Length: 197
Length: 197
DNA sequence: AGTTACCTATCTTCTGATAGATAGTTATTC
DNA sequence: GAATAACTATCTATCAGAAGATAGGTAACT
Image 1 (tube, each protein chain N blue to C red):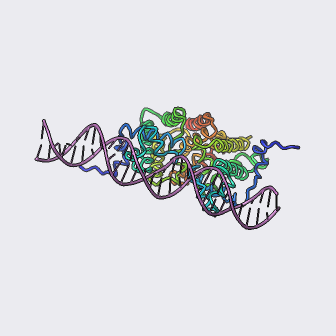
Image 2 (cartoon, chains in turn red, yellow, brown, green):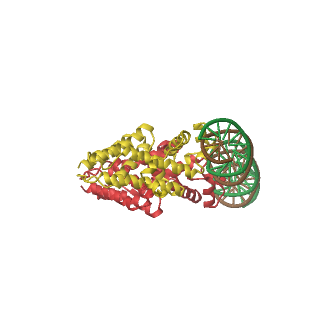
C-alpha cells in the first residue's frame, strides 16, 4: 500500500518527524529567538554560532529561511499538542482538561521566560512567508479543535474555545509587556472561574 | 511657573505633541509597517520611499530607530486614549464604557485590517530597545488604568481590567492568525456577556 | 545669522543565499 | 573482500542587497 505523502503532513504520522541532533539544536535556537523577537529575530549566522557550525551548514539542514520557520512552528505545534494529551479522556472532566491547557501555557512562560511561539508569530502573520503563516494557522486550528473537544459536556458557562484561547494568548502578551507575570495568572483565574460556574 | 518636563510625558499635556506634516506621514507609514510585521518590519528606506523623501531625511526627523519607534508608540497611545474618551463620565455605566473599548479595537481591526500596535510590539518586548519597550509598557498601564476606572461601580462579574484587555489582545491575534475576523467578535461577545451578568 | 527640511554620497555591518571543496560514512557492485 | 559510487554533514569563500547611520552640502524661510 502506498501512503499518501500529503496525508502524512496533516495527520499523526507527522508528529514523529525526527531530526538529527544538530538540526534539533538549530531548531531549539531558532525557536528561542523567534519567541523572544519574532521571525526577523532569527539569523542564520547567529544560529550557526550558537550551535557551533557555519551559516552555510544551517542552509544544508534548512535550505531557505521559510523552511526553517515552518519546521520550528510544526515542531512546536506537535510539542504543545503532545503536552496537552488527550482531550477526550473519559477519566477527566472539562475543568481538569482546561486546567491542563492553562498549565501548559503557564509552564512555557515561567520556565523559559518566553511566550507562546504562535502568539508572537500570529501577531506578525501579515508579513510572514505564506509557508510559515500557514503553519501558524494550523497551530491555532489544532489547539482550537483540542479545546472544543475538551469542553464537550462541560457544565458551567466556560466560554468558547476561541474565548479561552484568546485570554491565554492575550494574558501572555500583557504579562510580558508589563513585566508582570501575575497578570497572566489573573487571566487564568478568570478562565477557570467561569468554567467552574 | 516652571513646568516639570518629566511630568509632561506622563500627563495630558503630552497628548498634544505636534509633528510636521512630513513627520506625521513618516509616523503613519511606520505604524502601518509595525502593526503588520513588528519593529523589524520598518526600514528607513521603505519609509522614505513611501513618503517621497530620502532615507537620510527620515533620520532628520527621527535620529535613531528607537526614537522613531518610541514616537510611533506614544502617538498611538494618545490616539487610542483619545478615542476612548473619559472613563468616568457620569452619564454612562460600565457596560457602555467597555462596549466603547471593544469598539475602538474592533474599528482598528476592520478599518485598517491591522491589529493593535502594542499587541504586536508587546509580543516581541524582549527584543525591543528599552526606549520602545518602555513606551509599550506605558500603553498597557494607561489602558489598564482607563479600564479600571471604567469598571468602577460595575454591577455584574465582568472580570478585571487585565482579563478584559487580555481577551481583546488575544482575540485580535486569533482573528489575524486564522484569518477569521469572527473570532475577534466572539471574544468581544464573551466580554460583554460577562459584564451584563 | 540661524534654523528648517531636505539632498547627495558614502560607510560599515548584517542579511539570506550559493558554489564548490572535503572528509567520513554507508551502500552497491564486481 | 575490495573497489567504487553515493550520501551526509560540514567547510571556505563569496555575492548582492539591505540595513542603520553619518558627513557635509543646498535652498528657503525667519
